[in-house]
Image 1 (tube, protein in one colour):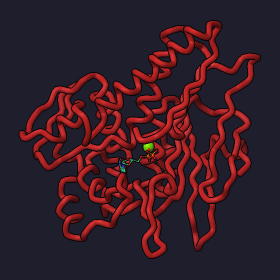
Image 2 (cartoon, protein in one colour; image 1 turned 45 degrees about the horizontal axis):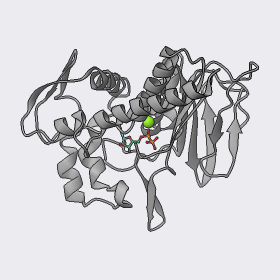
Image 3 (cartoon, protein in one colour; image 1 turned 90 degrees about the vertical axis):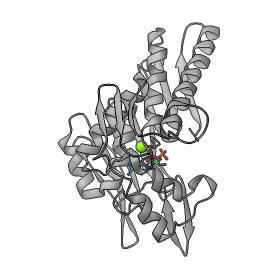
Length: 298
Ligand code: ADP
Ligand code: MG
């Protein structure tokens, strides 16, 4: 998943705890293989490299993620779009990054959009072999939820999983101490700590995570599906909600929508809070949704 993953648990038995952590990582590895779009022999790669159009029967994991991606595609008017793949790959962020040629960007933008795709139960209809999927905006969150599920099923009550800023927790640390989660300021070397967590999952999307500079301009990996260029409204978005998958998708979605529409989406949804950083005239500003306003000192 191109990131570091940390798991913290408290158990009575150290050996058993260590074994469960190892098994939780195996579960994450399994999810990663399924969702990897271009490498290995996983399910999504096979769909992306198919030489036929038509219906595909999805595994329960891939269909759960697709369904959720679909929901947010519709809720956001297409700001979150897992068919961004052919355009995203032109940017070659994994190899340091480059600005795509205008013509190749235009050619590939034609295949971005979910309007011709169908999802019925666990079956996905893809009408054109040039349509490709990238679940980079949701897979990490999903993997975090699955790791939490696995540990909970094995009776661990005190858990925190952090996959590169996509975080979920259960219970408390011993002595009824709450998990303390910090939020990094997008430009200053500063961590903002919440006095209490509004929900058990939180994710952040920032323009500083995967980016390169050309002529003093920052190019990052959260793309506006309309233009195929990095979304310009926000510099960092943090979302609190009930699952890491939804927090992950929503952080990316709100980032693409920009501060105004993004905040409106968060306010419209139940059990969602957000902190949005944006830049105006070189100044960093921030806005909080109503449920966390006054509870975080920025
Ligand atoms: P990070 O992976 O750094 O936590 P995000 O969760 O915001 O960041 O995910 C960014 C990834 O999401 C990109 O690398 C890409 O794979 C995918 N992506 C980029 N733009 C979009 C978009 N508009 N809709 C859906 N997925 C996107
Ligand atoms: Mg995301």
